[in-house]
Every structure is written in structure tokens, then in C-alpha cells.
Length: 288
Image (cartoon, rainbow, N blue to C red; front, side, top):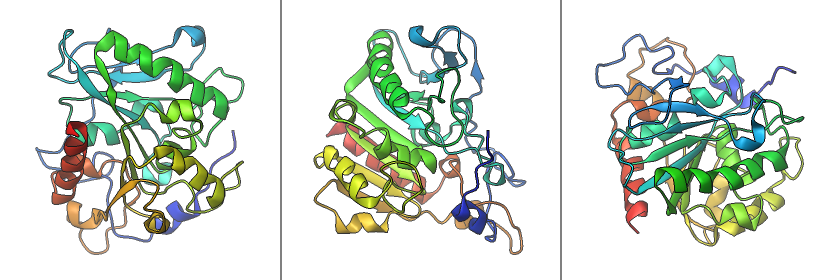
């Protein structure tokens, strides 16, 4: 597989910022730690590896987390997450097992959290850079999300899609690929990048195509965090956009001259007013 190079990620290396949990030498006792994925059976507070029936015998999998307050008879809102590209400079592996954003905003309570895969071409493994087989990726979510909601008490009327970097683009590029998958979501939240910000070189990555996808939101709420989403302010007819600038350096109190990567899905693992705002947005939209 070819090594992925992201010009924006490379540029961010010049900033004095940090990745908590990967490179933070001054982490605090209150920082969240994402549960490791295991091969155990699903249970409250546990994050487990699951293989869909259609992919038995392959290395394709998703990760399911049931909140610490989960009970078999309960009904819970759901967060579906797509990961960033594999890019070691910012600590992103591209792997389902290493997703963090959904856990950060929920704190491990009250929400079922599912990390969905991108299916590599050939449908034998997960793709860690870009989309692999786009249609297979879309279909995996459409088939498996309703199954999980039925089995574990997910509220199909309160499902949010989220992602970091590649995953932020995926919220629209994958999550709004057709009317059927678009109908699954109550809203979305993204961090760093957004569908339509620029042409990346893959099919239909131009802004005109992205705006057609975004029209499938039909006015639903979107929390757009971080960078590369300013163009959305010219298209407020498509969704209820809320924009949140996230000063990662301030959150982590980075000393002058410390050069660690800013592009991270871990910023909500530390207490800050920005995490409070993100959580408030999510809880308000769950209730609406």
C-alpha cells in the first residue's frame, strides 16, 4: 500500500501543539483514556471487535462500545465514527481500533459508540487510507448499523455520525452518499477537514458534488470543529451549522518551542470549555 501524504498535516508540524494520550508528557489524572478494543463479548463499559456475518473469514471488522451505564433493556443514542487516514506524524493509524472522537464527546456514558470501517478494495480488510471500495463501505454501515441498534438498544431516531480528518470528510462523502444512508442520521459532528473543502483527487471530491451530498441533510444539525470548513458558512440553507474553533495548544498548555502535532482526534479527552460546548451541542440535539 502506498504511503499517504497529507500537505495540511505536514504543514501543521510547524505548530507547537500536542496529542494527549500519544505524546503528552503532562497529562492529568482527569484525562480520558479510550478503552482498548478486545475480543470479548459485548458488555457495559467494554469496547469489542465484531465481524459482520457477510465478512466472516476476512479481516474486516468494526468496534462496538457499550456505555458504562448500559443495560439490556435500555434505549441509547448512538455515535457512529469514521477514523482519519493513517498518518504517523499526527498519531493517526487509520485503524478502527484507534478511533477516539466519539469516546471523547460522550465520556463513555449514555451513548453507544460504533467505529465503522472503510472496506479495502477486494473486501478482505479495512482500508487505513482513503476509501477503498466506497460502495462496500457505504453498504457495510447501512446493513450493520440497524442490526446493532436492534441487538443492543440503539435508538434509531437518535444516531449521530462523526469523524476526524478523513473521517470528517467521510461524514458526508460516505454518510451522505445516497438517500438511504443519509436517512440514518439525526446529525453529525466533525473535526479538521470537511467534504468539499478542496479537490483531493478521488471521484466526486469537487465542491459541487459535495454540496449535492450535503443537501441530503435537509436542515439537520452539524457541529463543525477545527479547520477547513469556512466555506460552509455560505451554505447555511443545507444544515444547522454550528462552528467551533478548537485551540488545541491552549487546551494542552503547550510550552513555547514544543513541536508536537496539532491534528488530533483526542482534544476532547481533556476537560476544556470547548469540550463542554461540544457536549452541550450533542445533548441538546439528542433531546430535540
